[in-house]
Image (cartoon, rainbow, N blue to C red; front, side):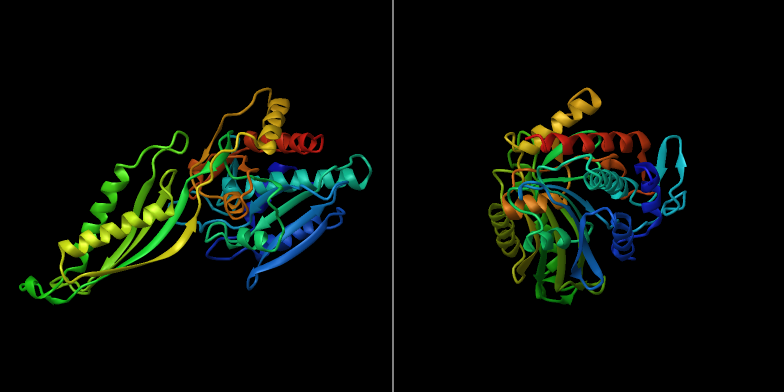
Length: 384
């Protein structure tokens, strides 16, 4: 059986870009890898040809389950590579490739640990008090519909202990900023550029909105753990000729929210900014639609999984890791937000700073560390 380092290299060579090749080759590989272990295996369609995979080892008790969550997709390779992004080159204690840290290495660790536990159970070397599950999702690098489907299908529950293997740089990461995505449209009136009084400049109005929202976000209070809320104006398009008053403009906004700023308050800021922009540029009208909305997830100090993971790290590594927030949003955050589950967090090999970059890599020592901790975690949670 391949160890986690060897398996990481193998998984990198199985392209699963999103958008791109998708996860079907990864699904087939995982099902083959776990076949014959005694685990119950299931695939569930999320999109046509794109399926979540769930492997389950039953326990003496029906619930809660310890659930390892790993996404199968990666971002596209993108420009700027000096290496083959799918060759899984190994050099100076690092493995290079698209998805190396986000999250083929984490998936490899989870697969190796799950298979070893399954073999131990199958041959009577180990008994599980609680079920152990491995959930491999699609579309984490998209709109996270794989995690949503798993919740809606009952693959995970409010009482489960849910851990993903995102790259966390040696930390346990639990809290997440909320994420609100908006598409904003400004409709103006076209006119000759020499007669601006006959038109209503949609781009100018959008600039007024941007200024208003940035100003309000700059005045928002800082959360003790998650920091300040942020707003990014990621893409903008408008007008149709350089010398014509633009009658339309579209803006995409990414708002990252922390208490006390929630989605309702954030939308009020945007709506008030629209009113001010319409007053500043008469004749322009605004509309918006929400294209994504995920709640903020705060740290749960009473989490049994957090306590168990700390003990597992102490036992395996000799010291407890720091506990901090995850900078982005993960499958486990989706699960936590949809179910109100306070036992969802991240711990995996690699550093998020390398994710999505050219020449992405993961350190081999991180992979070895993660395997030790996950094995110890299974033991810890089954001793409760």
